Length: 81
Image 1: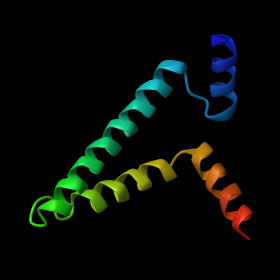
Image 2 (image 1 turned 120 degrees about the horizontal axis):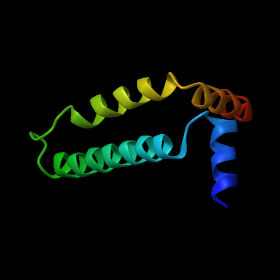
Image 3 (image 1 turned 45 degrees about the vertical axis):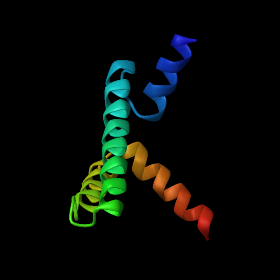
Image 4 (image 1 turned 135 degrees about the horizontal axis):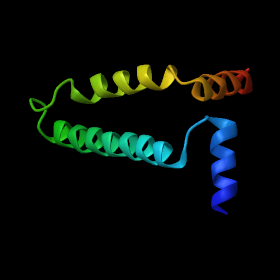
């Protein structure tokens, strides 16, 4: 099974398993952080006014630089038409 996972990662994103794990977990933790800050902001509007949108825009910009993400976005846009 691990061999299948490694082959999939190599074919789809050209990442090693450990790099992919670090990358995916990092984005996941950042999203959890943004979610918590957004909930707190919803309750207390003066706290973390711009943190949520700023971090989402930053992550979107980072993700668009990755070839496999650009390919996925292009396929998604074609499905909408």
